[in-house]
View 1 (spheres, rainbow, N blue to C red):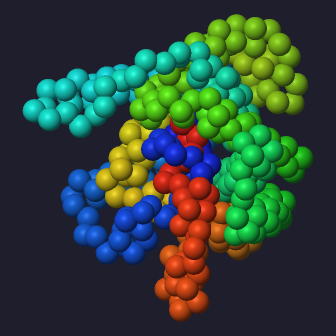
View 2 (view 1 turned 180 degrees about the horizontal axis):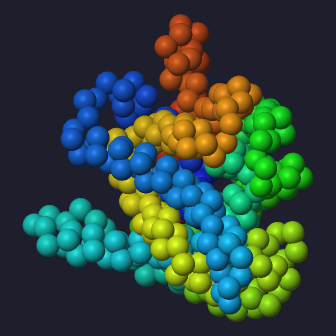
Length: 413
């Protein structure tokens, strides 16, 4: 979701090469923290890192930009904001769907090489992706609704709540055992969410939205993370064992999401939306009103195309960064993405500065770092840390709890 490729954290125990994660595992065998930090980056690696940072930032900013634009609707209705979250979600899934085309292009290109590096595609039942796609569709739609109610930076930070629900659901349904540092990371993340939410309450200078709407938006983002966590558990339990290429997985989920949500736009045209609706007819989604607004202000389509295209490129860049550099680098870049979104939002006047947001962001980073084991390389440098690392059974436990890089199949949704 917004995230699809931009949306996600990880199941740190997953055994597959994942496509999209908000914050990922740092311990990567022989490419640990120190190894990743000491390697000199090639121009291609710099390009991938920049592409991930830029497209990931554009993904959220373009969606918020579209929400900020105003235009008259159909039949001469007054000028109103472009608040069409479900139509925007359809566009997001179209961007995910395009990853399927990217996969086959890469596969064809690879097969022309003297020594192909990509494994031949394995057959699998595409319907395996239907339940995760339904979760993706629901979570993404909720987040687009929430983005109309709260700031882009708070939106990005509050998505860190997925760590909490992923950890709890993995214990309940996957019978995983979390390390003490992971439980501590969950508690720290909860504290960070409280601080970010408090910052929203104290810095509500948006005349467009009431305080109650901002609170509702923040709660919807957290609710969406519960659904994203369910998606991750479903993917871990039923999908990962088939070893589907990440781009193919993202594209398949995008296909289901695009088709189903496009069909749902028809009944949404008639279902009352109440306070959750921003269109003149007050229905869940008025796609015709959206197209009329686009016709009056073509700049809206630029914002929508930015959101659609950034999803696809962000997925590709995220996968490539994990493969070519390290999962640690991807975690750092994703954190920088939040900073970029925040800085741009402040620069263009979409929100006001509040010091509590800095504190909340730092606390969320610490929580994610603890959950993902980023403290381990630092502790290993200490004398007692090295002694613990050499203890019998430690490596096996670390491999079980912190295996390579796992996350939702289509992670920035």
